[in-house]
Each structure stands twice: as C-alpha cells, then as structure tokens.
Image 1 (cartoon, helix red, strand yellow):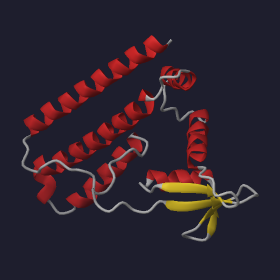
Image 2 (cartoon, helix red, strand yellow):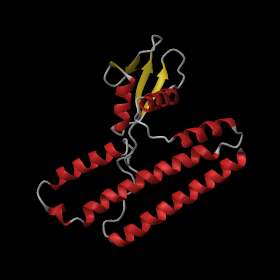
Image 3 (cartoon, helix red, strand yellow):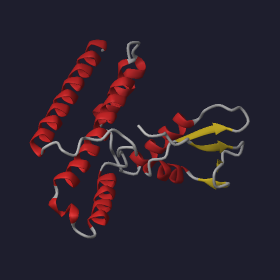
Length: 189
C-alpha cells in the first residue's frame, strides 16, 4: 500500500462545535461524512481533554443516515450487533466486519481494474473520463465504500475467466465466514 495519508484532525470545542484544523473553519457532521466519502480518514478529538471522539461521531453519522431512510444495515444485522455488545465472546465481530469490508473494497478494485484491462474501448479518446464517471457511480452505489488509493490491484494480464473464478472464490469465502459468524452468534444466545 502507498503512503497512507494522515487523518484529518477535527477538534471539538466545549461548545460542541467541530473545527477543521487544515482549513481553519468549523464543520458539520455532514461535512465530516463528505470527507470520509471522498476517502479521507478523520480523527475527532476533544480540545480540552484530548479524548478521541472519532468512534462516537462516526456512529452518530451512521445513525443520522439510517434515521433519514438511507438504510444500509438490515435490522437483523443491527440486532446481531446489539447482541454482540451484550455477550462476553463478541471479539469475533469486529474482526469479521473489518475483513468483510476489506474483501468488498478489494473486490471493487479488482472489478474496476479488470473492466479497464479487458475493455477494448480503453484506447478510445475520452475513456479516462468515462472511467472516472463509472468509478463515481460505483462509489455512489456502494455508499462510498471504495478501495483506497494504493490498495493492492490485480495484474493486468489476468483473463476475465480467471477473474470470475477469483470473485466466486471471494464470495464463497465471505459466505463461509458469515455462516461461521452466525453459528458463533447462535451459540452465544
């Protein structure tokens, strides 16, 4: 992976206002959500105590989007998340979620790379603009969960058939992990 960009530091003042230290202006939760959609990591800290409030504010952003009808998390998943907080053996949930999102990002990256590698239109003038629009569309459709710049990419010489097999294997691995997690959660009940 390429050099990771430093997180954008947001300071919360006693008045609960959020201050962007890069642009020296106040921001809203929606602004912070926009930074994240653009692929930027953020860190939110309390100015007085120095406490890291990032998790609290990210959860608040998710809750606001869910309450506006922009639902991403099915009720069953939300129930399982609540249960995971109530059971002592919940340590598997964070690792599972992180691995699942990483597989999703990698799969999207592979798909975009393969689309440009096997597409004969790639040599046409204006194709790069079309590809950028396609990536923006994918980002919008997936709620901004896109591969980070510098993420591992597939080799350009893999055939479409091989790519299809790998995607199928990735899907099988996700299904297997989900089944294992559901099994563990049901045993915890």
